[in-house]
Length: 103
Image (cartoon, rainbow, N blue to C red; front, top):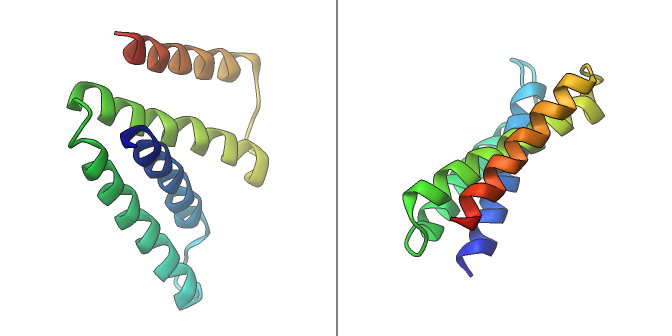
């Protein structure tokens, strides 16, 4: 169960990061509410997951899920640059996450 909580927390981190990209002074109140809800949900689920997972594993994986998802969302949704170096960097981050999980 803590792994599911951590995974959903990481995905919610991507949701609020993408939402932040879309926010401006004229954004609808519903978008603001969605971003804040995703942020609070992400942190709350991380806290619940950390009841059973060590800090040295849960927090880096939460950040890594958010990082990987945000970079992919930036490329897919916002036309941000795609390059072999970016893909290699993402692969190294994913490898680091797998390494932490394996320890």
